[in-house]
Every structure is written in structure tokens, then in C-alpha cells.
Amino acid sequence: MPEISLIHDPDAGIERLLEIMRRLRDPDSGCPWDIEQDFASIAPYTIEEAYEVADAIERRAWDELPGELGDLLLQTVYHTQMGAEAGQFTFQTVVRAISDKMVARHPHVFGDDSRDKSAEQQTKDWEAIKAAERSGKAQMGALDGVAANLPALLRAVKLQNRAARVGFDWPDAGQVVDKIVEEAGELVEARDLHDVDKMEDEFGDLLFVMANLARHLGVDPEAALRRTNAKFIRRFAAVEARLDAIGRKPQDSDLEEMDALWDAVKRDEHRGKTGD
Image (tube, rainbow, N blue to C red; front, side, top):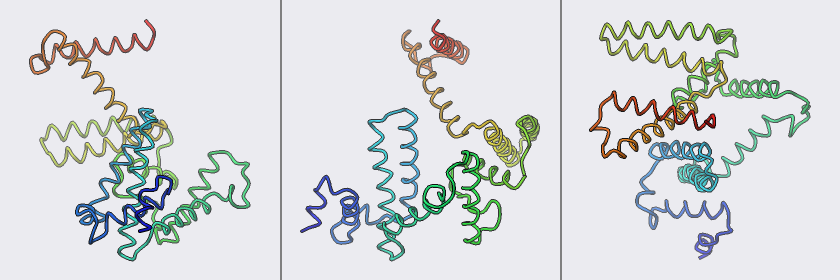
């Protein structure tokens, strides 16, 4: 059978992967787990694989990156196979759509527009093209089209960017910091009232303004928090190692001792960075 030789041909490229997925979803001979899946059940895996790509890049794990990108590509192939089965779209539909979009959004490369523009002007042109696309989709509001399932901090930044484009923004970071102080005070007031719903509301306001500060500073809040998570893991592991060296575990210690070890780990890190 031709499809069998295609599946086992390491040089067959994307057509091999498309055929593998078609076979996995075959209702008569495919994999029972794969056959049972639908768009909703696969979507969380798609998000997870995208984060694993980002993680490999952040760790500069270049030997792992091809595999992670392959996992992410598989998600696209999976969704397009389900779309083809339902008669909605195919892999080629998706390829055509993104190719058309890239050509339309880069008239300075594929059209008659001048390439003699700053990166800032090209960004403005890009946003103008996207706004025209949204208008064609009846997305008339400034905030229409920002995906609801984005990570909350990332979505906050995207919403704020959209609002800023129509003039709804603080002019400088100092005013954002003042707002952070205000929101922190309101969170403390909610805590003192023991009002859980109010605390969640005020905590959300504080996070939203923190995301806005990140935007004003040119910081990616998701990347910043991932960096801090990694730092916490690294330092806490060092605390555990120092306790282990004296035959103890964290549960055998107390906050005062672990806090002192934490400070020692930080000092050692800083010495390492300064070459002391």
C-alpha cells in the first residue's frame, strides 16, 4: 500500500506526518485514544506544547527544540485532520490562510510599499492592517478579537495595548506606580474586611496594573514571572542541599533557619555574578 511506504519514509516531509495522523484517526484501524479526541480535548495539549517550545528556547536547549517544535506542529496537524473529517477545513486551508495573511501584512516585502521604514512605523502599519482585518470581520470594538484563552497576564497586556492605541493609557510609568500603590491599599482594605470576593476582585485589579507597568517598562510579565519561578526553584533547591549536607530536610527545619540559608544562597549567587 502506498500510504504504508509513505509512513515509513523518513524523507517524506509534511506529507508523511499528515498520513500518520490520518491513520491514527482512522475509525476502523486507528488508535482508540486518538479517535476519541475532539478540538476541545486537544486544545489544552496545544497550549502545553507551545509553552514547552518557549521553555526550550528560554533554557537555550537547542538540541531539544526540534523535538518540541515537532510536538507543536503535530497539534496543528491534529486539528486540521479533525477539520477535514468534519468537512470544515484541511491542512492546505490553514497553510493558504497563513500564507495569504503574511503576504497581505507585509506589503513592504511582497508589495509596492517602501522598506525604508523604522521598526516603529512598520509596527504601526501592521496594527493598521490588523485593524482593517478586524473591521472586515465585524470586530468593531477596540478590544474585539483578543483571545479569551490567552494566559491572563498576556491577555491583560494585549487588552491594554489595544486601549492605548486609541488614547486610553497613562502617559508615563510613574502614574502606573501610583495606581499600584492605590490598588494595594484597596486590597489591604478588602483583606481586613475578610471579604473573599472583594479580595479576589482587588487582587485582580492589582495584577492588571502590574501588567500595565510591565508594558510601560517594556517587560514581558509572563517571561518575568517564569524567570522568577526558575530563580525560586534554583534557590530553594540550594537551601535543601545545604540542609541535606547536615542530614536534615526542610520539614526538620524552621522558617528562621531556612530564611537564613536563603539569604546565604542569594549572597553566594551575587558573589558569583560579580566575580568575588
